Length: 179
Image (cartoon, rainbow, N blue to C red; front, side):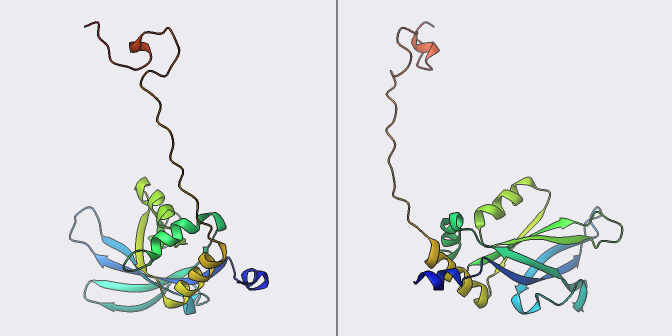
């Protein structure tokens, strides 16, 4: 790939976020929210529009987010593409202001590692949705342009007896024989 072709690959891509609200049978939770898809063609559609509804569920256009790619994260993106269904991960946060909806789109990423960091906190909703073809082509071009394989380096294990000379084994973390 030529240098000018590499420079032509944008580092961000805007996508529209579609969420679904389902009524809950749980006495403590009125509804369950989940991201159901992202659509690049809806990136400029505004905010919070009702799209469709059925018995106990509603779908909304919840707004747009930018997916940002970083040169040093291409290994994570490659991991995503190694899955049977590559995904865009969308993070939703709770609506905190009185004029905000119940959930607000917070982040869209193609890095499963970044998504996992948000999922571990337990405070955000993290959903994996199928990656649209436009997003896949863009991310694949970025990976091709910027990925550099890192050679595997085997680290030498320390010998059990390594440590400060003259210290008893129990102080070096070794086995204790004085029991």
